[in-house]
Image 1 (cartoon, rainbow, N blue to C red):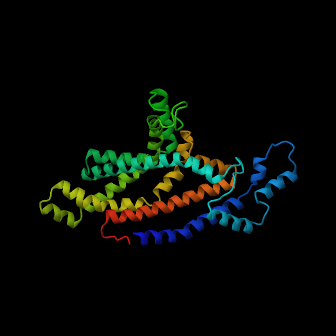
Image 2 (cartoon, rainbow, N blue to C red):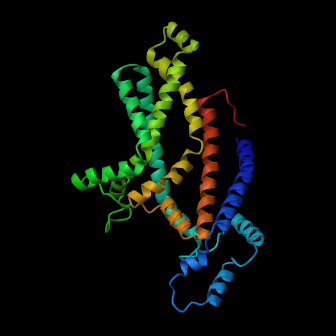
Length: 319
């Protein structure tokens, strides 16, 4: 296992290098001047002051020199100070990371905890009303936009029923460790973020289960007199989960990256919303710090997926 982890970590270095290079080039070569953008409207600011600010942030140097300096700093996780907030970009990203991680993990638990059982039930009741309901739900859940579902939930649950809060992570004035209040704020955004995944996993699980239960070894196990529950959960389910595990690769990073819309709708102070605002303002250090953390999470999620393969499929050896 140790050799496997070391090998995969070494293999991830070119991936992170490519992500850093592409992000650097896209931010630097995109039109617009970040210094003029965040100094727009400032009184008594002449051209010399603007050039001094550009030199302070190293933006007056040739792009190849900026790139070399960036790579050296990125190895030390030092992306510089934010152009807008004048604080360390990495620190600001890490301050918002727990909120986004909490939202993404909650959505992932809902996706797997609801989507897999729904797909299994639909497959075992093929052609019945349960199967039809799950299939319709899978289509609607994948097709309806997240922002529309979020707005409808806010109007119905928060405005009309007044059951759950509509924004933020904690009610003003509540204790920081009030987990009940935090859970109430988390329910709706986590469900909205998870809805499309629930639809995808339910359809995928249904398809894979139907394919597995039609195999010869399943019919042989049934003919040998094994109980239906044993055949389904010990033989069929484990093999049907292999494509599900494949789909998990990069899912956590995708959830974090896809949380932008949900964070905007529910005013959730997370990483996606903050990185989007930095991209609009061309705040280079914050953009680079956020993208590199996304890339790191992507590598971690693929590593976890490969380890789960060995758990689900004993034919695969991890060494």
